[in-house]
Length: 127
Image (cartoon, rainbow, N blue to C red):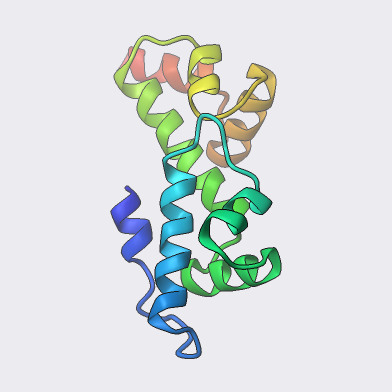
């Protein structure tokens, strides 16, 4: 999943140097590998060595989505995989993808997939 998202970028604005692109790809790597306890934008900015505004702008140039949208996409993809491939509870899955509240997780999942995680899981079981 990450390789697909990190390798994405043939459309990158040519004003970014290869060093800047590498930093943004590293930011994506950090986001992907810290889903359970997401890093803040200031933390990511400090780690990769660019200011927050530049991070947000360049991230959107490289991935054509905001940092939050990128994190959300990873969270929901992982949640869907956990629902399909494990017997973990909704609360456990929510925690694994970075939600402290199962109701917030359920709300976000329903916004993305149109079904609550419980209904999604039940439909998988019925098949």
